[in-house]
Length: 432
Image 1 (cartoon, helix red, strand yellow):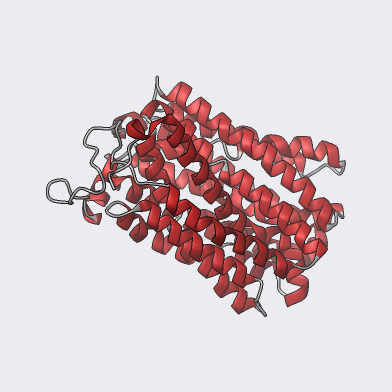
Image 2 (spheres, one colour):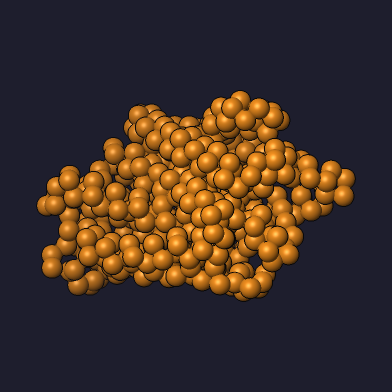
């Protein structure tokens, strides 16, 4: 079998690859985020605290997800990315189904760790594949389109998880969405081929099936780190994304509980309301970020992080207003704006990370970025909101979660500041 290339397979095949990658990423976030809509039912059934739920939504998942991400990406830079993603999808989907069999905190915690183990192999190889299938002037839009998996997956997890749990129970919800992912895995492997490393659009692209002989072999971990870590842009972009993710992941996980406690919405109402919010606002925000990144970044590389910084500065007051209204229609409109702006950063920032290193280092560079982003953002985000809620409950009762969200919104300001600084450094660190 010869290596697949964008030129040989044509634009139609490129679109197909991007489409199925979006499907896989949808399952990635569906399985990751479904816990949020089920948190109330699980808390009541298993007798858990907000802090324990926060640990399962964050640290349990992030622990192995971040620890394994870099070595798996290192492997993806020198072996079949489609095989790695197929195995990853099977593992995380299987453990999602196993969450439905949990009997207490520790058994559910371990299953969530298993989901993180699988998802460690799902994202960085996909970033690398997309960068090899699409030319530089289309990458921000292609990566933004791939990131549609975040709002679609989040919305699907909220909608299907909540409706299945309301109709049957939370255990069945886990089983259904987990087994669906297992079915998709062989379809992905049979239809997605690895393109050249570096692609047809970058200098030095090489078919995956050629022997990896010096000097063409994939660079070692030390060489990648030596190239990546001294660049200030890498740290500014990674820490800026991590700060935004503390709030992004935290709010996404706890909003269903906030609507239950503060607005009295039942499970079906929350599922429909938040599912529509995530799908409409999130999809619009992801595409806006990719479009602005490609349009402005071609003229000035510093525009990539600048787009994200401005988005977070606008999102901050909008979120604050949204959680202080009781009318559901007004709340929906107010939440829709920051829900979209919350995801504008994906296309521009991920594109920037891809261009801090040569083509054969992209999987490892992406995993290094995701390590920082998810260890801090995902690992801390959901736990932070839950722990602050438990701390404030003696003072504010059921409204404690509202004040917890107030405090967490400050992470958006930290993110904006870091991205502003990154915009002044990126041009110097850029690799074409």
